Length: 182
Image 1 (tube, rainbow, N blue to C red):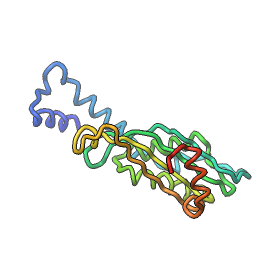
Image 2 (tube, rainbow, N blue to C red):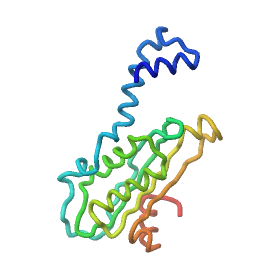
Image 3 (tube, rainbow, N blue to C red):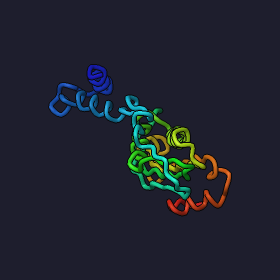
Image 4 (cartoon, rainbow, N blue to C red):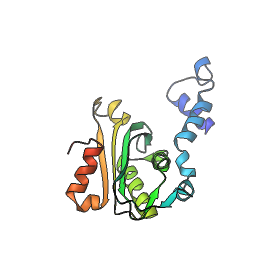
């Protein structure tokens, strides 16, 4: 990928041999490999030995999970916070695995809508809870730096499964606990 990055630098009118750009292709290569490292991960391996049988039937929430991803349309970052909640049905996920799951999917080329659904569906598939709720609030540099150039815009997406979709009170409780405006 290093030669391709050098080529891009040349095509935009830069000299990849000048002092400030000599190591840029290597740095961009390493950065892109890190930012897309989610492709080399799987939910099964990530959650291995972190699914537990527990008699708990109240809401479990991990909120304000910092996340960043690359927009698949422009390869520009979007970043913000992810809030994940579920109501167990005999099984729980180790709490530290939830932010790792967010990172795994975020470190792929994404659209925010898909990212939100992937997190919710994976939790639903792995522990079959009574319900799952995921909300992501993010700023997109493709909207801030180019296009509509709206610096203060925030995109909010949600995925509600089970009791969070079926029961307005359950959904409201989650949204109140993560402080999302209804």
